[in-house]
Amino acid sequence: MTYVPMLTRALRYGTVLTIVMIVAGGIIGYLVGGSHGLFSALIGAGVTAVFMGFTAASILVAGRVASGPDGIATFYAIVLGTWMLKLVIFVALAIWLRTQSWLDPAVFGFTIIAAVIGSLIVDVVAFRRTRTPYTDAVLPAEAQRPAEK
Image (cartoon, rainbow, N blue to C red; front, side, top):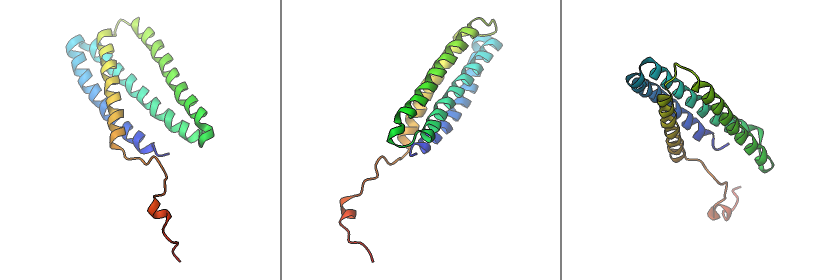
């Protein structure tokens, strides 16, 4: 599981992003929409944090359950199934929240959009900064070396 360091780093960066979204989104939400804006921004940041955790958890669980080349279909079934579940939960949550009088839809929407863009940036930065081997190749110089006695 060579991707565990990358997921760990992405979760760490995601935690920082969540804190930034809570503080910045809360302040901007309060300035724009008062207490309704504050609650909307906090809910938007929380939803994004939970969904980022679902993504990382699904990849970690799928990596443990599906090992070897025969488990690739199981791996993708778990990951894509989790993403579909997130989509259904988000749509249901959005429909329910749309009817709530205490929610500022503009602040909620902009917080979600900012957090999603931020989480994509976090994932790219985590991927780029994590050094993971992608092959177990033997170099030619090592293959031609005589065996030590």
